[in-house]
Image 1: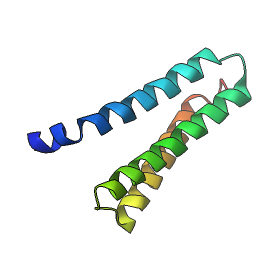
Image 2 (image 1 turned 60 degrees about the vertical axis):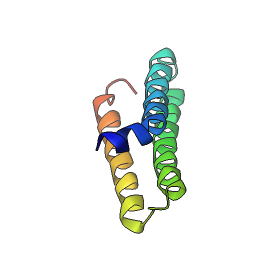
Image 3 (image 1 turned 180 degrees about the horizontal axis):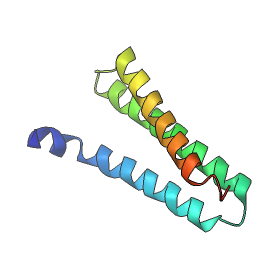
Length: 88
């Protein structure tokens, strides 16, 4: 397990940076609700694409993984929009 984490550490750090950058950008553009929504949707799309590309590069991509990333991204998007409903 530790070997697996070390092997994919760059991936984990880059996806974490992507998500933090998305959150930071949403906070910074709080004056423009349409831009906030765009950033949230784009962050979700990048998360899904990045996850699929990661598995493609490591030759373990299958339909279950694609569906999982799409569902997790959709769930995260729905939760974020629900929480920000009063703000957006």
